[in-house]
Length: 111
Image (cartoon, rainbow, N blue to C red; front, side, top):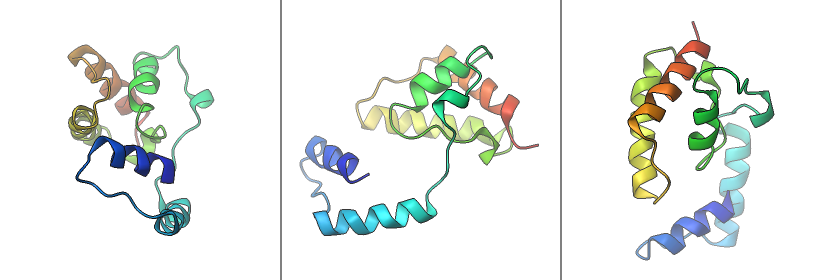
């Protein structure tokens, strides 16, 4: 986590990253309260959209558990994340990839 904050600080010159001590406090907090994701190896890659989900979503953060949201909530989440991808200079999902990711997440979502 601290390393990722340092990468962000290097990308955005006006952003001063946290000190080592602050980074340690952030890491402890995140370890206790952060969203828990799924293990990459547990994703059924043969399912429609699963490959795109692992490739696109994993470039910025741990894969979110599809049961984190109900079905339609994933659409807004994916579109919001695309905005973050753009601002961080990541590979941005194509429209086809977005729809496949949304479809996969909705198929696995909390009922």
